[in-house]
Length: 303
Ligand code: COA
Ligand code: ZN
Image (cartoon, rainbow, N blue to C red; front, side, top):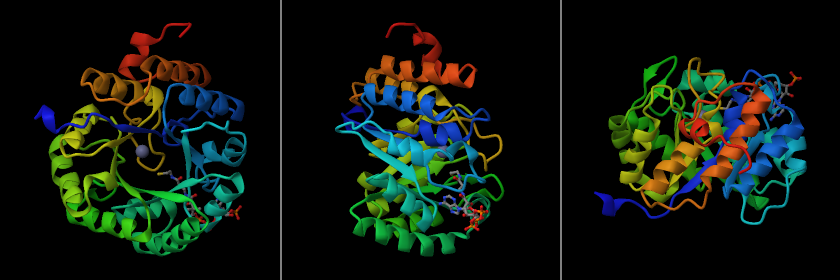
């Protein structure tokens, strides 16, 4: 079993977007930039810095253009931001970002509530957005939300997840992020749904995005590793929750993921203590304790 596991995993830090969008308290642009600075210091190579979405839909992301414009040059770090339509792409180009993330869902009701488009319509819109992004020299990640359970429709058929994964890759995305938006999946569903996706499109094109609502997040990561997936999303401190999926907890915590992978001799290039240093800034800015297990264990000063 152990021989099948990878010796290296890529962690995509989604805290500045997925994490902060679910926090009732808004942090300032200065605090966001300081937090991103600490994430960079920790060795994370992929950082989602915000979302070019409607500020009415997600007010926490309203300053993404300013954040993007003031990002430090960080060799080896890929910044990306969420883009829901052509207007979002224009903002990403204006900010000089080289990577965007589009997002649709595997359940129509969630898709409508989240981006006010059906799944079919979103694929039309993204066809145009991705085409223009690739022409401009950008690369594209594609999130597929509610791949296991929809907060409005219930269980999601795995065949639909496979078909949409294939469609998003055909549009020109280089990876599809199979996302458990509600955080309710358990490893059996990961083996089934993600296993089918891996069989259809290969593991290198799949990333996994787990929320930890019921405590199954890390078990789901292990299931993904066993299926050959090498890319996992996480957020420092484990903050957040989707504003359109009531009751969902935050992402799996980056430091908890790094802890587990370190103990399994799976390299990430990420320094757990420095991730905690970033999370500490968040705990101070948000004025609350964080759900991560390793945060309280390592939350010592002077890292
Ligand atoms: N960036 C900023 N503002 C945008 C925008 C973008 N990419 N796209 C649209 N808007 C603005 C419009 O200018 C308009 O503003 P106004 O009311 O001041 O005139 C308003 O948003 C509505 O525009 P419209 O084109 O009618 O969009 P909509 O109401 O159908 O909403 C989305 C569609 C996609 C823009 C909106 O639902 C959205 O931003 N969703 C993001 C949800 C999200 O981030 N969820 C969390 C991630 S999983
Ligand atoms: Zn999420």
